[in-house]
View 1 (cartoon, helix red, strand yellow):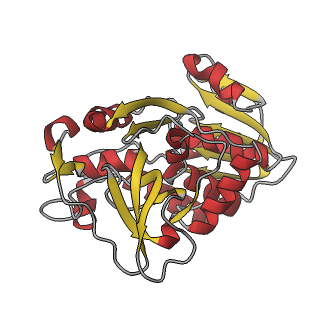
View 2 (cartoon, helix red, strand yellow):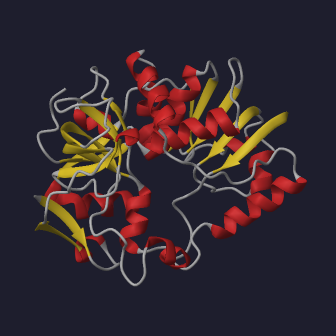
View 3 (spheres, one colour):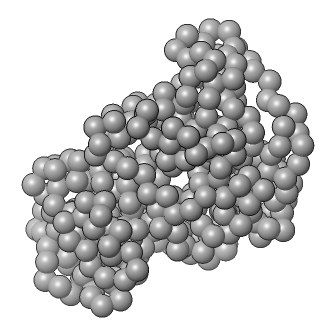
Length: 329
């Protein structure tokens, strides 16, 4: 099969190549999926680059643990192993696995759920890390409820576009912060108010919010917290910034320390993809409350360029790899 292969760390176009590799073997309890589409998130860029350097022992030393990058996937079940009871060949699925940037990928059955019929494979592939993270931050960390005022700083990115829609699904009044070119898009996905950060500083507007999800960290923690109501909470989640050695560790430490002394500051949270949350997300999609926003699509051979684009931090929604005819529902 064709797959994107990585044997060292570096710039995506320098270290990623399209190669012929063996199709994954299906073990007991596993599902082999013919990949139609896979999505790209900032974690893929970080792994390809091997940044921050402090994380390389987790990524793999001296080279990546997995030769084929990518995690978020949508496709059709090709084969199932022994003891797989909930899926069968021919089922259209979404989920996560190691080695998504390939024609076939394999993982245990608890990594997949059936694809919503109202989504294309390209849209379905976008339901992965970004959507799960947004759900967990809003539901579990922020405990967002109907009637609350929520601000999403960085509302036009992969995580931000899901966060806006999920907060609306929870019944919140949502304000999205983004650049001028993305104002109309953020409004179109349900934001009640949109702030163009090139023209207005939300920390100086006088508006107060019950929950702020900060995906950008372009203001200090105290500056951002002053936009909260007395009982409001701030969740910092700027996972795309920081230097090569330590990445966002400095911000993580600051928010962790602040959470011990400032009651409005939530500490860092660890997010895990899980099947239960995939079911929640697909339920919201089938109810018409979430529609993935696609920044653009690339062929499998264009994966290095797609990852490079995401790494620049300017994607509108989610970038998707079209692997095997992902343009059909």
